[in-house]
Image 1: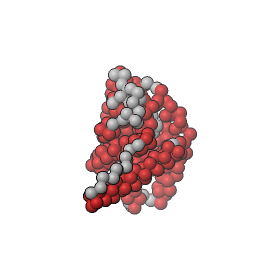
Image 2: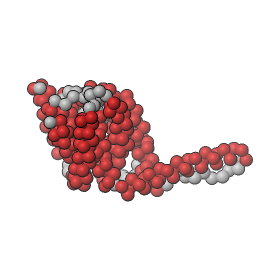
Image 3: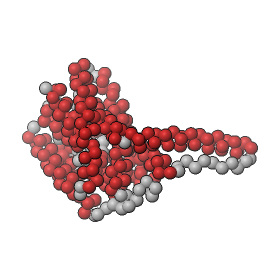
Image 4: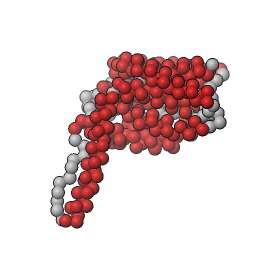
Length: 292
């Protein structure tokens, strides 16, 4: 039965990952119903997220390639500027330094790097608490309700503007990164928190969704490497390991089919509709907690 359960979790992950409703919270509640514990930490959840991350890479491969190239060139420019600084101090010359952030892709890449700083810090500090919270549907239920409130407030406030990457500031990228770090807890939707933060800072809905999707990739990969040690746990049998890898592939496969439609829904649907869904999901999660 564990194989069937993991396949169902993979499909659930793929469908809920690209809309602001907390895929992690859905997985935790489903695992409670299936009787799946967390003896292997959050490895299974991390693998399922890694599967859907593959769908993001497949859809945005051209943009990601360009961002990677710009990051490398920015790094080389930083090294070149350091060499120029040393040269100028030795010779007394005043050679001009290269400008690091130029163009839309470089600005976008710089924003992603800045946003990851608080995400990594909060993720490392809160990882053990996240495992404890995932063992009960009570905490995901509360997380769903908090997510719903934020979505509803953002929608009723008519937040959002026209700002894109060129107008984006690094301090707001830091705040959005903090919001992503808070989503380590189940029920707290990473996409909802980051999109709402971006909209409240005056960014366009399109940029908010795009930035949220892109900044999820390093967070997902980092979370996987943080949990990969559980492959050596005694509870991780060979059968469970193969089933988990198979479920990860299923999550990626299904994600490739649904990602475009889910992201379009996220861009066009009113946030209040996702808020109402989150309220219902929270109520169901709390009911499951008290019944089981």
